[in-house]
Length: 270
Image (cartoon, rainbow, N blue to C red; front, top):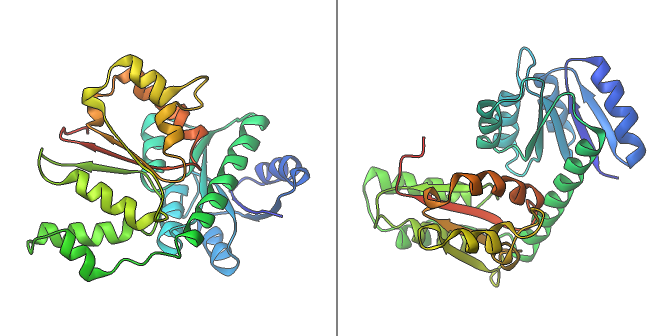
């Protein structure tokens, strides 16, 4: 029975979620604020965490960051009554699996929980099949050549990234080795035979994007299917048309458990 920790400062939310989720086979545990939620997670690790964003003294984003520091594999879904692009980006930036806007539909909630469970199960299996690949400092430093503070910082960042499966954006001038870093992250965070699908968005057209990325009904196209179990590397992501970027969000949600996403750009996207 999958375990779910629900962190919200409203008792009514606890009662509603318990009535909806428990009949679906989840073992639910509740905490009234972020500090209590973090303590409960440390005392008894949970499969999933569902946390409100607006709590005191510790809000949902702070809880998310603390959980990820304690356990990089924690799968956290953020709830918010004031969903905005900024809050969504902030949650995803710090490693949230997804976010839900209150009031949410029951079918949307249950579908999100199911995808989160599949995501957790998939990556647990991949980690086991990869034999828990360890990053050897000397090996990384051989491949990422340089003694400058910037290179040393990059090595440390890559070591952290290969231990988790969060999406990665590589930003830098042309010729700075973004593709090499993507290959290294892929190699150390997947099984030896896992596929690495590389797409240069600057060389593709709308038809290719629709067939390769979007597919039918947002289920993902050829490139997405080829990347299952491995990594999808979208180079020059800034070249992907804005409407396509919006539609890609649905594809990523539908396939979150299937592959790791790495993107690169030589533009200042912020």
